[in-house]
Image (cartoon, rainbow, N blue to C red; front, side, top):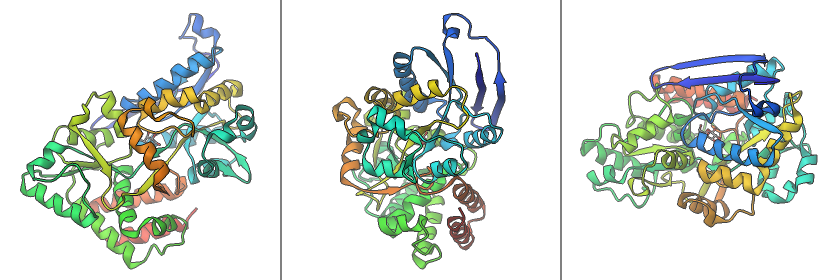
Amino acid sequence: MRGGWSKTFAVIGAVGLLAVSACGNSNDNSTGGDASANKDVTVFTWWADGGEKAGLDGLVSAFATDCKDYKFVNSAVAGGAGSNAKQVLANDLAAKKPPATFQAHAGAELGDYIKNGQVDDVSDLYKEWGLDKAFPQSLLDNLTVDGKIYSVPANVHRANMVWANPAVLKKANIDATKAPASVDAWIADMEKLKAAGVKAPLATSKGFAQEMVLEVVLLAELGPDKFTGLWKGETDAGGADVTAALTKYQKLLSYSNVDRDAIDWPDALGYVNKAQAAYTVMGDWVAAQQLSDKVPDSAYTYWPAPGTAGNFQFLSDSFTLPTGGQDPDGAKCWLKTVGSAEGQKAFNTKKGSIPARSDAVATDYPKYQQSAMADWTANKIVPSCAHGAACSLGQNDSILSAISQFSGKQDVATLQKALATAIKSS
Ligand code: GAL
């Protein structure tokens, strides 16, 4: 690697985590050959494996075509939703050793990096590349602070999805073709599944995955306006309706796998695929994972989480131009690819997400994304807290610790208090 910022690599196993981070300037020329004539562009993500890596690879191939003077250097740190990556990134930014570019969620999370002066204004590039016309205004609003734009969105993901195994549902005579109408109806189905011998019908995993279960229950129980208002501090987080939702969340967790705090989301999905569980709540990067694992369409089904149909809970991955980055020109070339029609197609056909650009052709995409594109236009849009659209990094960290504590102690009142405190914080 020449003139590179860092080589950060992490491997996460089923039982533990081994993370090796060797940050700082590195001068090893180990890549050698002709490629070493190109300048490195270190791209920091948490897309290290499976469908996520497949999406990143798509983007990298478009970058190789568009940016021949540069060489992609993978600085991915494994762990769902950036569970390990975000801390590594925070350390590198604090040490003033930013990568050439890093992923950040549109919305409150991006706002943190802007407030901290860690990312540059890219509004001029929007004009230069016509991006001000390419993305929907609602998304541009999520990226804009004081009239300036600080990142380029790569996609739109949907969070409020359930992925289910029809063969398991059949064991309990449950119709796999449609979602239960409400959280209560879903709980009734969980009981049927248990009676049919499925010990842990709901597969989930540590941290953010449980937060996503909590969010879909809140969305179903409060409805979209109160749900969105919750994160803005406009809905009373201490209210009786929130208590009722948290109590249902507790009930749902009682149907989940006992190792939920030890595994990551692909393992939980694995339980569904292996017919050990009926459902998992997860964002639509699952569609990419199934594609990458060659799970046939007939082996799984999906619908919006019970009680949330008609709502599209969104998040958007965007790429930044870090302040003081090593090769801003290389980073800009990456951003140009990210925002281009070809780059978005190469990425999103593999990533399970839909393009952030409005000019994409639906038939270029797999079946799942075609349905998501239709819903993105027809549904009510609500934000995800777990994936930075509604919550800042600090708020999310506090919610994650409350969730992990709740997984063990199961105390609804403590969880509700912690949620309310987190929302009030910045
Ligand atoms: C989200 C990210 C997605 C996906 C997911 C699971 O935060 O926006 O692109 O990577 O985490 O790791």
